[in-house]
Image 1 (cartoon, rainbow, N blue to C red):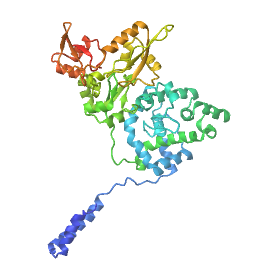
Image 2 (image 1 turned 90 degrees about the horizontal axis):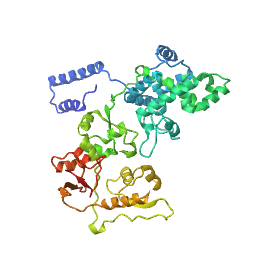
Image 3 (image 1 turned 90 degrees about the vertical axis):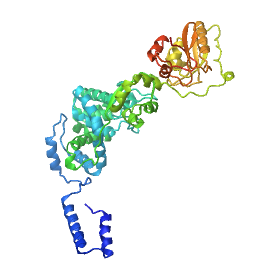
Image 4 (image 1 turned 30 degrees about the vertical axis):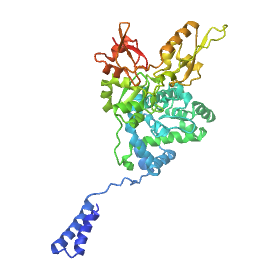
Length: 480
């Protein structure tokens, strides 16, 4: 322990100015003596210290390991142990810091499927416990699934969501895949080799070896990367068990973000959700790596969002107004009355055709589902007719819709009635003995319920047969 420089300078300054008498000089001597004694009593922990070890010591530790996996130390595995505890200690500390976040997920799934718990270390070799890891050939996630293999296990990939990066779903898929490979080869080391290079390459190595059935017997016939893959896994089994013996101590403790899962059953903009709930957007991204571009699209509205535990109760208690607020879009200035464009007229097909072609201009608050219902068709049809690769549409976009004559006439009537209203009044008007409210720019069901005392969101939805909270400027709502 070093004496603060300012204290030493204080005594030296006094001595220089001739102000230090016998007593003060003695005090300075006692102080220096105390400092030297204190240095011998308080050791400074050296996180960079690398303890020495021998092959025999490692072999003895391996024999004491309790594992359902076969593990017999050899020079190849020992070389990787040396690499992880000496040459690349930073990597080992990095994955040690991440284990409390992902190991509980691994352990739960492995136990559920009754497979060896030590298979959890395979994710370290695959991705370094990084759910967003991407390989040069396009494999993604903690378990590095390729798109084709991931699809077999329901890890679907779209422009908005990539379930290969979801920790829980990808772990479930990886355990199922490893279990199927074990059934195929009857050996966990061969199952892991097949996970790395494919079952076809393992079968080829078995044939070339003359029918041998263990990893080390077919070792020379496997692809070069796979020869290192299993030994690295076994080295990591050892490293995690004996991290303290190799001084792999974390300088700062790491804690996972405790969370709950909440399903919103609608499109969710994470930035908007973070804004209205006070959550950190980076926390939401960290907890939900499968979400791309910070949005849960309509096509994945059943996705259960992970949210920090400290915010879960708040979200649950205020779900009505939060989900309502998530549907509010920033209203663009309305055009002047004479600039409002009417929907394009119906363009009929030739008389020989069984369908009519119409165009529909997307209004504020529209989604493909509501447009499809209005025109008696499906979302898939709308996407196919308009060459849409996703469900995302924008205000002002023109959609082509094919329908029969009767549906087309009905659709045109609907479209005409959906022009934005320029009414400025925010009070309810009486029409046909019913109280009607005209939706204003920026309105939401929650805001309307606050304006009109005694009217709840649920009442408005029931009176107007609304399936969700989406409304748009100009829309007329029955409120009583």
